[in-house]
Amino acid sequence: MKCFCQGQTETCIDRVPIFHSLDQEEKREVAQITRQKNVEKGELIYAMGDEVHSLFVIHSGLVKTYRLSDTGREQVLRVMKPGDFLGELALFSPSPMQHFAEALEPCTMCMIEAAPLRQLMAKYPSIAFKVLEELTARLERTEQLLEDISLHSVERRLAQALLDLSGEGSVVELAVSKKDLASQLGMTSETLSRKLSQFEAEGWIEQSGQRRIVIKNRRGLEGVLEGG
Image 1 (cartoon, rainbow, N blue to C red):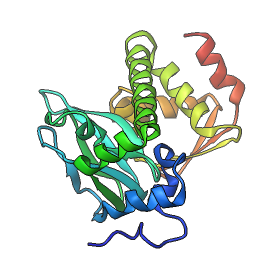
Image 2: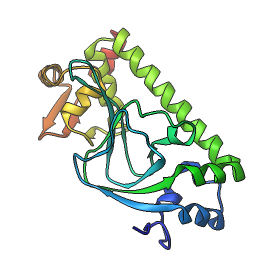
Image 3: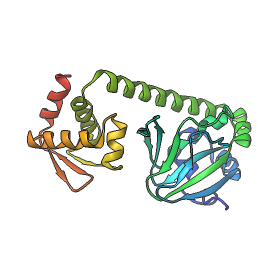
Image 4: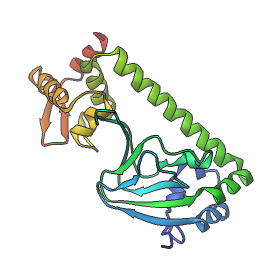
């Protein structure tokens, strides 16, 4: 399928930071090696052990990457939104993927074949540098997650997540299910539910539906961080 990237005013290529330094003609070169992929909710983009030969750029929808333990427990690594990319290891190594990638909702993506993209990276080194910057940032986030899980209590991890997700406001609209949020924070769904109820009883938050959380007392949550 011909990619919608070709000919649109705002393309997936325009939205991806690794291509920001390219001019429109150079972006058209990328579009020439790009094709469209539509993915349904719950569909795997790739599985652990698959060999991937393309870079996937998310144009619409959300994707989660995760691993499964020997017991089948899921550990969400990250949730990716429009403008993010995955499968980047295909650019550097033919090794099998070390995680799963699954659509959390219907997604439209650009697929860019690895071999011709590597040629463009040699022609435009800025692309390669941006990919490495993103990989470095992801590694830092993964290390931070491991540190949080090993050193900090579930209360602290949850309080920090709520504060981060709310930004400067007081409302958290979860982009993922509470099950996926729990996995991302390194806790069970039951523990997350129990701690949210505890925070609500303290008067710090108010839950509304399955994905809306209103922060009523920001200072209370910040106090959890201070207590470790």
